[in-house]
Amino acid sequence: MKVLIIGNGGRENALAWKVSKSDKIEKIFMAKGNGGTEDFCTNIDIDPKDLDGLLDFAKKEKIDLTIVGPEDPLCAGIVDKFKEEGLKIFGPNKECAKFEKSKEFTKKFLEKYNIPTAKYKSFKDFEGAKEGLSDFSYPLVIKADGLCLGKGVFICKDKNEGEQALEKIFKDRIFGSEGDLVVMEEFLEGVESSLLCFVSNNKLFPLETAKDHKQIFDGNKGPNTGGVGTYSPGHKFSKKTYEEMEKILRKIEEGFRAENLSYYGILFIGFMISNEMPKVLEFNVRFGDPETEVLMPRIKGDLVDIIEKCLDGNLKKDDIKWTDEVSLTTILCSDGYPLSYQKGKEIKGIEKLDEDIMLFHNGTIKKDGKLYTNGGRVLSVTALGKNLREAREKVYKNIENIDFENKYFRKDIGLI
Ligand code: AMP
Ligand code: GLY
Image 1 (tube, helix red, strand yellow):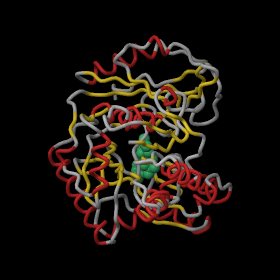
Image 2 (tube, protein in one colour):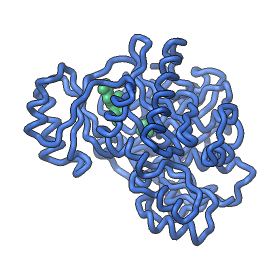
Image 3 (tube, protein in one colour):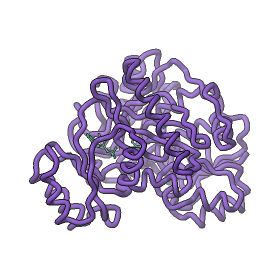
């Protein structure tokens, strides 16, 4: 089979690594891929947002299966386009991708199907939203409705901070038209957990849990990033919590059917758990990054088989098997991320990594045989261990071998 994977990050590198282990695979193309995928895939110079370019390429190369990493092409309708041409592609169609494209759309769905979530209101303009600030208690969560690379959320400790966030979104338009609508919602306290599910014809098949670390500094301090470290399984919750999560999954399926959706692909559910009761924070319609970096090493068997069954609509729970080992990833970043940071620093020492380390590249580029930083998140250093401590020790020992100017990473992944 020829597989095309769309995306440039650590998530796509981890997907390609897992796909490459399938006996069925003849060739993997990456659009655009990165310095890590170049070693075992063919990187092609087509932007993930260039839907027509990707479609032409898939037709010309007779690609058997396309896997979409990031949300942008999904929200722009790449799945609909490929399917119209009879091409097999893994991901939700444009209608279903709205669960990520619009936070308000998801909130309405959650409310309609009685799925626990934070209370909310949405606003279309600055003045109305400013008045709305009085209707909530603080801290208050203010979110741009659209796609903001995980950075569209403000946690405001008082009205003043709320007004500043609204100014940034509505007046400075820091998110452009993605901030045309604002969702304000009650702040939920608790423990966060990501649950990714394969979705096969509106039926949800949960993967194992993963715990993401979104803030840039140790102790979960500082601004939110796309995620800078993760481990799987995530927190262990009580039986009651799992039962409640299960109820939520069934309600989501019911909602998908009642709305006449035809959901295939991945649904990523962000939960906040408090007093054993989970509430839904958000939906994403794709694999998580860095969750994928820890989930792929734990899946036993053939990912391509799972995806094909999922697309045929006959995936079963037993088709997805897991190793008992624990996996952990710490991301090496360029100092300054998620704000401003430098690129183009030479990366040295990856040949010194232990054999059982999986190194997924988030933002690297190769030039004349040398590897350079090419993003805020640079490398995901990943290991499996018999427990969290062992996985953590392997990762942190090996991080020392990798060197580049302005290397920054959290020291506490696996400790909190
Ligand atoms: P989202 O993009 O909606 O997942 O939000 C990004 C992050 O902001 C989440 O992972 C949470 O850490 C935080 N967050 C979002 N909504 C809430 C909420 N209602 N209460 C508390 N924290 C939240
Ligand atoms: N790690 C969070 C995300 O992929 O959205």
